[in-house]
Amino acid sequence: MKKIVITGGTGRFGRVLKSYKTNHKLIFPTRNELDILNIKKIRKYLNKKKPDILIHLAALSRPMNIHETNISKSIDLNIIGTANITKVCNQKKIKIIYFSTNYVYPGKKGNYKESDPIFPVNNYAWSKLGGEASVQLYKNSLILRVCMTEKPFIHPKAFANVKTNFIFHEEIVPLLFKLLNKRGIVNLGGKSQSIFNFAKKNKVDVKKTYLKKKNKIGIPINSSMNLTKLRNILKKN
Image 1 (cartoon, rainbow, N blue to C red):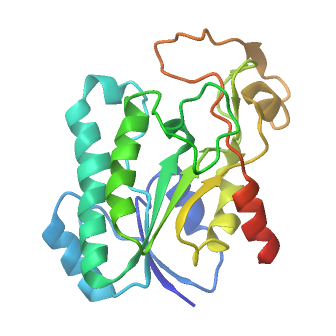
Image 2: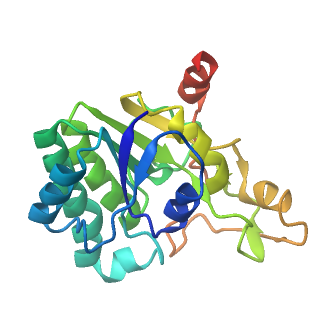
């Protein structure tokens, strides 16, 4: 049994994680208890709880355009906040698991392996890669490049020409607990398919729409990931 502190527990995935039954001891600090922009508070909280692992979910994600219009907030929460967490985890010898995004890949050809070159497609992805950079310096870490969404699919339309690896939050949680002892980088998602094909299995009335290759929202046409590494890990569990 591991003692695990989880930042960002009020977020969409954090709320799903809270309801999951596990033998591990999960601790969800409030933002006031553990402010990722206050290194003294981080240190004080982790000194008190003494976790084995810290899962870092706290981040700025939606709306996507906030990373274009308010880069200071994006830098603070996704880059500096992650760096602060990493510094303290390093000092305290606490393993860190960092949730990144498949958007760090160029998003053109798809089937990206963990070892493939990265080139973020939008400011959100750059901010998450900025977080990855600090976590990479600390070897007792796991970076998960995740492609997940909430259930049910929330949009009335879905892109038929955009390929990715969407998987629901509820399906990610059990996979996460099978990866606790891993280090390095692991792509984490579901079957490579169009967003429309993914959505229609859960939402029969979803309508097709198409994304222009050059779009203001910064969504790539094909950010699908190669999940061979993930499958090999799961086979051994």
